[in-house]
Amino acid sequence: MTAVAGTSPERARRAWPAWMAGGAALLGVAAAAVSWTGGGARLLLGVGGVLAVARAVPLVTGGRGAPGATVGAAGGVAVAMALGPAGVAGWAVLAAVPAVLLAGAVTLLRRGGAVRRSGQAALVWWVLVTGLLAVTGLVAGWPRAAGAATVVGALGLGLLGVTLVVAALDLRAAAARPAPARPAACAGCACSAGGCGIPR
Image 1 (cartoon, one colour):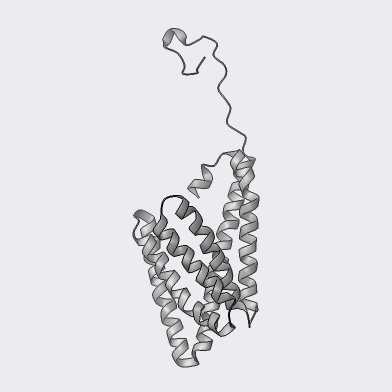
Image 2: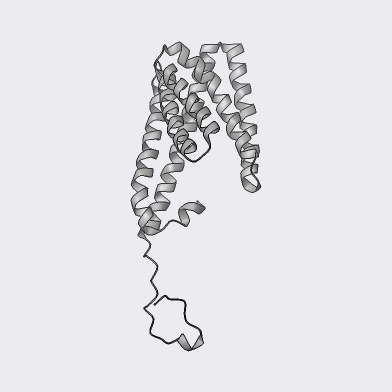
């Protein structure tokens, strides 16, 4: 939470309610996706697609057109599948969960330091989850594997929600910190030594 720790109290005061609301919403969606037997996969696809499109907008406007277009197109396809039959949505989630895990792991592996170690851990999780889904599909049937993929996707969405809630609590604590004291106006006490740096 380095970025949160460096946030000014004013910005933290404005940001933490939105982060808290977003985290709570993601936790609610994750719970609904697990408990909604007939529509959990469609709910995950729809929410995931909307999040992907929202992520694509700053990528495109920030000069990263190709990655932004790819993410936006994937989000649009996910939303379209979420509006289709439940069976199609289940197959889409079954394919999307390992793909998203692998994409996240590769992205983290390209960075250095502790982030790269997180990518290695994510790669291990990708192997485990993909193997579990494949075995479930071969032994218990692919509809059961699609259901398991929905649970895994909901857990991932819930983990993201918990991360946002924790960050919101950190921002709320940062908002409660007193603002740093501003330097006093120049009284001429240091002018003979070259000045104190306060513009006059």
